[in-house]
Image (tube, rainbow, N blue to C red; front, top):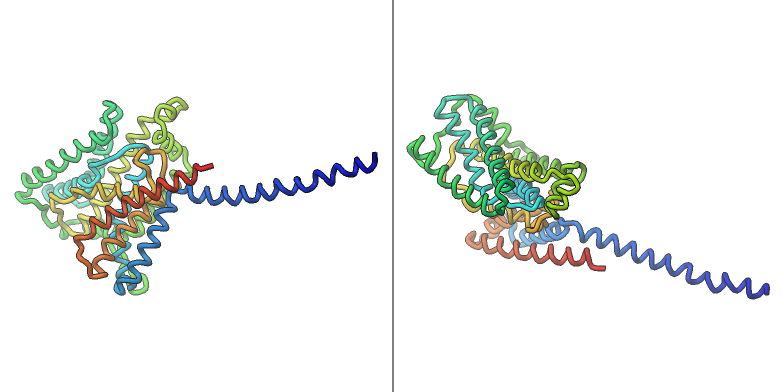
Length: 358
């Protein structure tokens, strides 16, 4: 009897260590899956690859001034890509974002110059107009139930015509007048389009604004109730509404955030060049959306991050400037963008499948 009692622990001891080893392997695999499930992983690896490529083939790309130019190019795309990405996570699109940037700049310039007022008055009026455009897009979508694609396509065409027609009517030209000698211009330029020196290299202030907005958007998505609402309405609006999420408010406010981004980039363009061409901005909305998609935001909504579009915009900046520094024909730029967009979409799809695979 004693021998049989002592045999029990001898038989059960080896299996006891087995599950611990399997648990260890499961934990390691879960860590990998958690990393793969992050929407910015694919674009981060892609950005590293693009950087290494141009660093190797374009000697000019390695200089500090070249990198400052890349960061500047990336920031002008990235500032708009952030609210566009948040809107996409919320399950919607805004095809009017590109011309809305121009509408903001035109409004500020003409209000200031034609009414001979301090440029800050034009800046504030432009902010109100930009937020109103975003609010209109959001309100029209939730009121009618039409897809945001159709609503913002109509806004895109409307703003494109208004920008050109009103500018020619008021100024008699397709461009606004130079406002560089008006009151408040220097102060506004310092906020929206100044430069500072780092190690002897001139860096645009938009780079700092870009990083600040990215950090703020990340905090909102991951640490606030509003961030939870964004993911909820993008995943399933009906389910979100059933648990008390204010779906209409969330969607309208996201469109207004795009309006805010359009205002900020429009102010940068105005105070960087002192004047604005009324026919510009067309096609930029696709760049903003592409940067968000490359950054890991799904076209179906409910998935994405604010960090991913930062790397997506950085890739755009590196490609657009890297082609020039490498001495290649810049006509190939759009071809590179198409390849990047398709590649990023496939990578995001693979990452999602890998993360959900048992």
